[in-house]
Image 1 (cartoon, protein in one colour):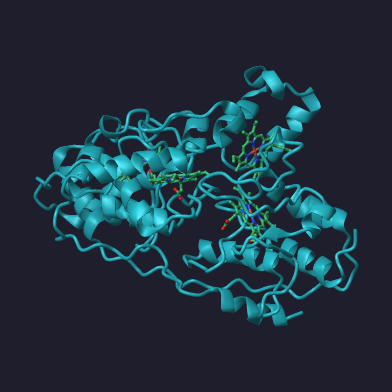
Image 2 (image 1 turned 90 degrees about the horizontal axis):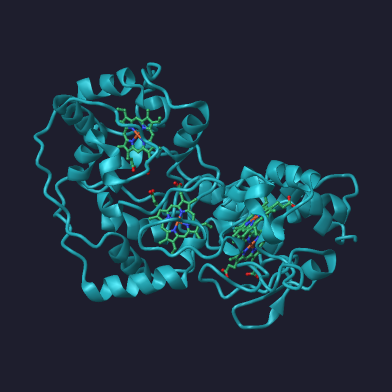
Length: 408
Ligand code: HEC
Ligand code: HEC
Ligand code: HEC
Ligand code: HEC
C-alpha cells in the first residue's frame, strides 16, 4: 500500500549526515587524559571491537567468535577452518558463495594519524567512508562520554604541528590523475579525475582488496591530522605497517601540492539524505519460505539466531554482544519471529505489529538502513546492522507477507 511510503518518512528524524568539515585553522589536539585512555581501553574489550577489527590495542577472540577471521578461514578453504567447522565440500562451496560481508576490514593500527575528534564523532554517528566496502562501522549503543573515551584510547598522543608550507592545489589535482590515485580512491565532491594506469600495479587480488579499503578522499580533511597526511604520502607503511596503500613514490614538492589540494579544494555538498520509498504491496500471495530465503536466513539469522543451535550464542541481536544486551529477537523460524523481541521496558513485543504511523516495526528497521547509507541518522537503528541494505523488492515481499496475515 502506498501509505507505507509516506509513513516511513516519520522515522527519518534528525538527519545529521556525515560530520561537517572541520576548519583548517582549528587548535592542535593535546595529549589525551590518562583516565579517559584507561576508560577507553576497558570499553574496547567490553564492546568487543576485536570481534571485527584487528589492531594494536585489541586482543582477538577465538576464531569461533571472530566475525571476520571465521569468514576469512572459510573463504580460504576447509583445511584452514578445521575443528568444528570442517564441512563437506558442497557445503563449504555454498558458504564461500554466500559469505559476502565481513571479509575485509580496516585494521585499527597507526590511528595516531587520525583526529581524535573525528574518531569520537564517527563512532557516535558512523557514515560510509569506503565506497568499495559493503560493510560499514555499525551504529553501536554508545553515549558521548564513551565515544570520547574510546577515541582517547585509540588516539592517545598530542597532535604534531604541521611543518610543510602550502603547495599548489591545481598541480595537486593533476598529480592525483598522473599518479593513478583514483584507480583506488573515490573523491566525491570534485570534478572527475581520470587516473593513469599504475606504473607498478599490485596483483589483481591485492588490487581488489586495496580498492575496497581505500577511503573516499573527500573525508581526508576531516579525518587526518595535516602533519600525518604529509608523512602518509611520503611512506604510508611508516604510519600503518601492513597497509594496502602502496608507497606512491612522490617528491617533497609533489606531496605539498597533493596535500594542499586534498585539504583545501572546495567540495560540492553531499546530496541531502533521502527517505527510501517503499514499493506498493504485491497482488500475489507470499509465503514464509520465500521471505525466509530472501531475508531472514540469508542475512538476519546470523545475528538473531537460536542459541540452542549456535553453541549458546544467539548473536548480538538475540542474546547480546558488541555492547548490546540483546533484543531477544530470534529470526530463525516462523514461530520465533512471531514471538517478537524484548522492548526497553523488559516486556515482549511484536516486531511485525505496526508502529503508530502504520509501518510494521521490522520494516521500519530495514528502511532505516537505506536511510543511514544516504547520510541520515534515523531514530531506529538500521538493520541488517552495518551491512548492505535489504533490497526494496525484498522489503516489499516482507511487507506483503505481514499484510496477508504472515502465513506459515
Ligand atoms: C561488526 C563489525 C564491527 C565492529 C564490532 C566494530 N567495527 Fe569499527 N568498523 C567496521 C567497519 C566495516 C569499518 C569500515 C567502515 C568504512 O570504512 O566505511 C569500521 C571502521 C572503524 C574505524 C575507522 C578506521 C579507519 O581506518 O577508517 C574506527 C576508528 C573503528 N571502526 C572503531 C571501532 C571501535 C572502537 C569498535 C568497538 C567499539 C568497533 N570499531 C567495532 C566494523 C566493525
Ligand atoms: C564460526 C564461524 C563464523 C563466525 C564466528 C561468524 N560467522 Fe558469519 N557466517 C559463517 C558461515 C559458515 C556463513 C555462511 C552460512 C550459510 O551460507 O548458511 C556465515 C554467513 C554470515 C552472513 C550471511 C552472508 C552474508 O555475507 O551476508 C552474515 C550477515 C554473517 N555471517 C554475519 C556474521 C557476524 C556479524 C558475525 C560476528 C558477530 C559472524 N557472522 C561470525 C560463519 C561464521
Ligand atoms: C592501489 C590502491 C591505492 C592507490 C593507487 C593509492 N591509494 Fe591511497 N589508500 C589506499 C588504501 C587501501 C588506503 C587505506 C589504507 C589503510 O587504512 O590501511 C589509502 C589511504 C589513503 C589516504 C588516507 C585517507 C584517509 O581518509 O584515511 C590518503 C590521503 C591517500 N590514500 C592518498 C592517496 C594518494 C594521494 C594517492 C596517489 C598518489 C593514493 N592514495 C594512491 C589505496 C591506494
Ligand atoms: C550484525 C548483526 C545484526 C544483523 C546482521 C541483523 N541484526 Fe537486527 N539487531 C542487531 C542488534 C545488535 C540489535 C539490538 C539493537 C538494540 O538493542 O538497539 C538488533 C535489533 C533488531 C530489531 C529491533 C528489535 C526491537 O524490538 O527493538 C529488529 C526488528 C531487527 N534487529 C531486525 C533485523 C532484521 C530483519 C535483520 C536482517 C535483515 C537483522 N536484524 C540483521 C544485530 C543485527
